Image 1 (cartoon, helix red, strand yellow):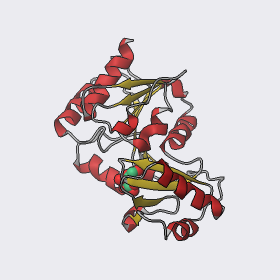
Image 2 (cartoon, helix red, strand yellow):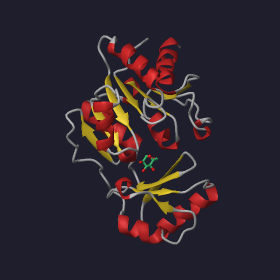
Image 3 (cartoon, rainbow, N blue to C red):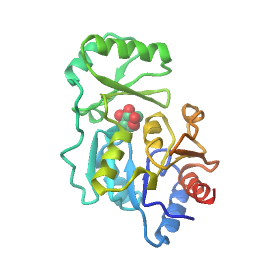
Length: 242
Ligand code: GLC
């Protein structure tokens, strides 16, 4: 198996979800000579990622991208204060006020809310409903970005922020070209991440929202059949074999 310089993987539903598969992932990657840098990119908070590293068998990463790409910390657990670089017009209070009366949106608990992310539970939104949210934000002058995953979670972020942009920031700081990077994910909030590296692995248990993701120039998409961490391993083999 060819070893990428950096592996950036989502956690829930990707590296996490099958403890035996995670053990296999840990065993295989521990045997790699010249271990790649490992980055987790997740919707979780930093605190909950470090909990999984300390208690859940996740290998220690070189960096973590948390809160749907709105925060980054190094392997030393120190946050990178320069991120997010926000050039958009953004104000969480205005976002919340603007969306208050829209039907079908329920704010997630306080721990999920940050100065750069307003998160809702919003089951079964279709394109028209998402367009309505986007229009409402535009009307009050907010330059937001909507990330809808699992047919349930709606994250409103500042434009230009997310897992993909955060991954590019990490790579820029390390001086590593995206072509040397493999990413992995399973839901809609991984879409821009999967578009970031030379190879994007969609694990076998991914939600239908990623089924149509196809390779394009400079970004090969590999749909693995195996699930969770086994899918990441399979994707790495497929990426190396062709
Ligand atoms: C995680 C976060 C949540 C977010 C979801 C999808 O579950 O806790 O706030 O909406 O990921 O990005």
